[in-house]
Image (cartoon, rainbow, N blue to C red; front, top):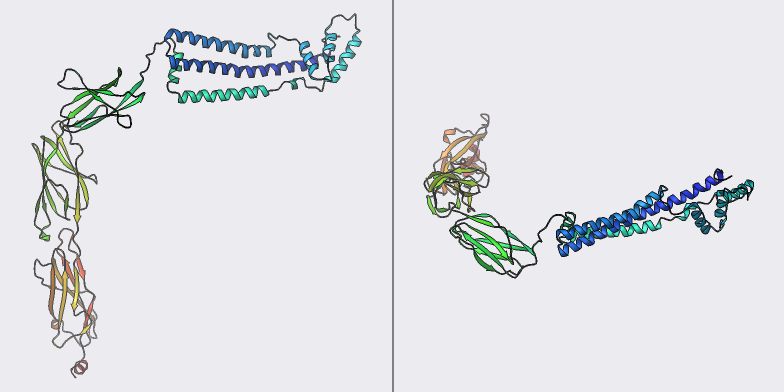
Length: 521
C-alpha cells in the first residue's frame, strides 16, 4: 500500500491543481509587475536624459542598467513562476501544501498531512497495510468534495492590473505632452550615437524664400518656438555686398519679430539670429516685372444710339450700351512678348504687341470683369493686376400710347379717322406701323391677317406726338363693315434687333343710312 492507491493519486491530483493555480496567479502578477518595473525604469531614465542630455558613455551605462533591471525582473517575477508551474525548481512539497490546506479547512486539520505521511512511509512493519489504507480512505472520503484550489484568489492580480493600466495611461500622456520626451527616449535606445543638444529656441521665418516685384515692400516675420529672446538680429546681404549687415529687432505685443523691407530694388539674402542660434538662410528675389504704365480706352457706342465716342485715360472700367466697341491701347514699363485681357468668365482677348505697347479691342455684350495680363521678353508676368469692371447697359423697349381715338367708333362720312398717339424710346425709332384688317362684314369673309401701313416719323427724335389722318376710302367698305386696327412702333436697336411696342386693338364700323340720318337730327 502506498503511492499506488487510487485514493492517494486522487488527492495528489487535487494538490497539484492547487499548485498550478497558485503558480498561474504568480505568473499573471509577475508579468504585470515586470512590465510596471520596465516602464517605470525606462520612463525615469528618459526624464533624466531629457533634463541632463547625457553623453554616449553615460547613456550606454543607463541603457544596460535598464536591461539588467528589466531582465532580472522578468526572470524573478515571470520566468521562475512559469518553470514552477511546469514542476521545475519548486520550493515546497506536497506535504507543505497539505499542511496549508489543513490550516485553511478546519474539518481536515492535520489529518490530510498525517495520512499522507503514513501512505508515503515505506515502513510497513509498524503499521499494517490495511490500517493505512483504511485511514487514507477515511481522509479521502472527507476531502473529495473540497476544492483545494478555491483557496487561491485572483483578486490581487486584478488590483495589480489596475495599477498597471493607470501607469500605462500616465506614461502615454507624458510622452504625448512633455516636449522632447520622445526624443530623449530615442537617444536612450540609440545610446552609441552622439546627439547635439537642441537649442533653447528655434526660428520659424515667414515668408522664407520669396519673389517680389521691383519696388514692392515685403514684411519678414520671425516666430520663436521655445524660450523667446529679448531681441533678435536680421542679417542682410545684398547682391553687391561682401558681408552681412545686422539690424536689431525687438518683439511686438504677441512676441513675434517683424521687419519691413520698403521699396526693395535688388535681391538679397537674409537670416535671423540670437544667442548663437540662427535660422536657415533665405533669399528674396526681386523680379523686374512688367507694369501697366498707361491705359487708354476709346469707347464707341452703337451708331443707332447717336452717342458720341469718348476717350478714357488711365481707367479701365467700362459702362456703356450693349454693342459698344472699345479700342484699348496700353503701354508697359518693359518690352512685351504677350498681352491679353482675361475675363472672369475665363474668356480672353489677345492684344497686338509692339515693343512696350499693346493694342486690342472688345465689344460690350454683358456685365463682366477683366484683368490685364502682361508677359515680358523673359516670360515674367505682371503681378496683382487691377480688376476692372464692364457694366453693360441695355436698350429699353419703346413705349406707345393711343391718345385719340382710343375707343371703338363709327366711321365718319368722309371715311377718315384722325389717329393721335405718343411714342417714346431712349435712342429713337426705326418705324411706326398701322396694322389693320376687315374683322366683320356682311358681304365678304373677315380677313385673318393684318395689312400694314407705315407712318413716317421725323428722324433723330426720341419723343414724338404722332398726328395721322387715315383715309379708309380705298378699302371700299360697306354698311356694317368693321375694321380692326392697332399701332406698333419699333426702336432702332440694330445690335440685338429692333424691339417693338403695340397699342390695344380698336375698331371702326361703317354705319347705316338710318344711323347717319338719326345722328344728323
